[in-house]
Image (tube, rainbow, N blue to C red; front, side, top):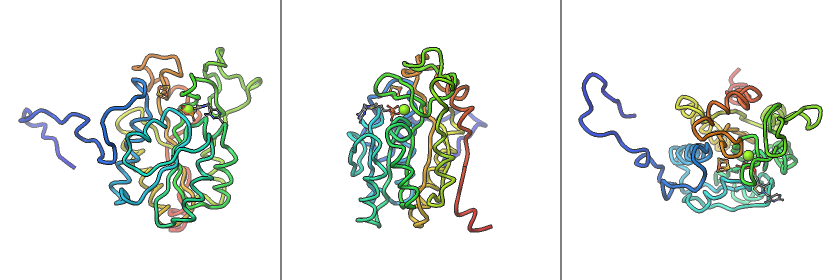
Length: 264
Ligand SMILES: Cc1ncc(C[n+]2csc(CCOP(=O)(O)OP(=O)(O)O)c2C)c(N)n1
Ligand code: SF4
Ligand SMILES: [Mg+2]
């Protein structure tokens, strides 16, 4: 870690964000919307993979959502799969190549709306994979429709007056469900709404991959990500909006760590 001296003026200009780019990202550019949280979350995953020495032995299984475009720019062996099916595809790969770190990348629509059975069955089987969930509470890629994880009161393209429990049902809190199952090793929820949360989320992702390498079972790291376009808020207002809406239903932090249980 570099120390920034604050007792005298800087001798050189500070580095631009792009100069910190993980080597597993082939370009500092992306094609997602201004203010989108997904590029930050994906970058964190790639940084952790490099840090753990897994750059040459990891494979990502990617669902369908805005994050899917990163398959073009990540220097990682990857495959796209049918909407919601990433944990099932990852299961096959991990069973054939147990030495490889296998991770899935899914949105909340992909995981909790279209693929709920896949994540639950993979957890029930205790598959030794790391699942990354980018939760923005909407189907961002198709224009901001309600998903199973949209929160009560949330305005989406098809809940213009806000999600109403009596009419639309309650959100599915997938992290709590997965944590309650014996096949999960590590479950946590992070966020990318400010610098401190980004740093904390990085640590959660690291633990998620470590438990896989220790062969402890399925890890789920959920990351709250801004989607100003799908929420119909200005790009600059996404972070505050997220913590006032999703942040109340989805508290941040570790939900389960089998390593802590084993030590006790
Ligand atoms: C079986 C199937 N149903 C619907 C779609 C259309 N579709 C593509 S991306 C997407 C939204 C994905 O939402 P989410 O997983 O939350 O990711 P986000 O775009 O919000 O990051 C949908 C509904 C599809 N590709 N396949
Ligand atoms: S629609 Fe939302 S999730 Fe998709 S790129 Fe734009 S801000 Fe990101
Ligand atoms: Mg989404």
